[in-house]
Amino acid sequence: MALPYGILAIYGALVVWIGLLIQGYRRGSYWLFAVFGIALMLILNVGYFINGAPNAIAFFIGIYDVLDNLGTDAAPALATCPDNACTVWGNRYTNHPSWGVAFHDRFLNGSNMRTNLLYGHIGMNSIVFVLMHIQFFRPGHGASKKLHSILGRVTFVCLTISTVCAIILAGQHGDVASYGGSLSTYGFWFMALCVYGCAIMGVLAIRKADRDAHRVWMIRFIGSMWGAFWIFRVMLFVLGPILRQWDSAALLTVIWFSAPLGILIAEVLRRKYQSGQGGAMEGAYKGRSGFNV
Ligand code: HEM
Image 1: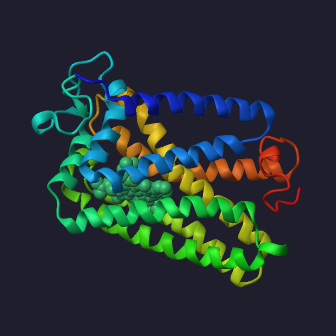
Image 2 (image 1 turned 90 degrees about the horizontal axis):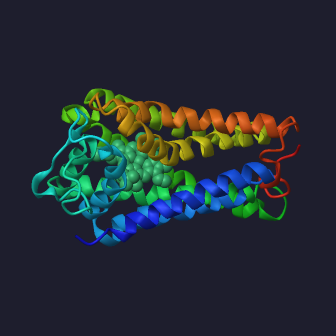
């Protein structure tokens, strides 16, 4: 069987990324860590549009197969899929995270409408993920005022489309047992509330010309987006093997907790930075974000 070199490259990238996180912590600048995370997100998500949803999902599951199979042949949260088509590992792994098997099936055998909703969600959210950083580093005062307000509107429209797509997709999870059924539906709706709620609060604040509150809510929004994408996927990677005795436990945990955790981390860093004590974010944002210490 040919090794899936793409998966090995992702593992290599994750190791480099951890290195950048440690380096960022030491230097007090997370700039490179953030750029690397955005690039990696784009590489993963663009795969959906190049290879199609089922193939991109098989690649995604391949990332999880290695750890989930470590040291076991079977567990309640592992499942098989027809012709073992839901992974890029060939026959090396025949058990996969059960959520992955259901995910692959939903988009291999689902309607075009469902797949288009997924594309809408992924495409729009990927754009938002990039734009929100541009907004953060080019705040709406001084020379970039006009651009900031235009990009802000574009970002908000994209976010609205992606969130609506996600809400509809999540509404179909009631009978997907290995996602956790209705708990998955409500969990994703709660995630949407966390993300969109922060964005709405930020928009309302700037409409009242309250720039300080606008910045606070948009930092929370950025945290929620990092939570919904990266904390979600990294947590699932770690929790999958730990919680595999309970079907859907790992997935439900990350669905419910990733976005609030992202908001919490953003809030802690913001307070630490604004109080001027920590310096952990200082190098990353000083002079680039419009943050006033
Ligand atoms: C508002 C917060 C979010 C919600 C409620 C949400 C919800 C969902 C749902 C329901 C699915 C489809 C699962 C299925 O129906 O089988 C999904 C998949 C996906 N979402 Fe999100 N999501 C959110 C944030 C994000 C963000 C910020 C990104 C990217 C920047 C993103 C990218 C993806 C991708 C790429 C997939 C396919 C799975 C994968 O390859 O990772 N989502 N999301």
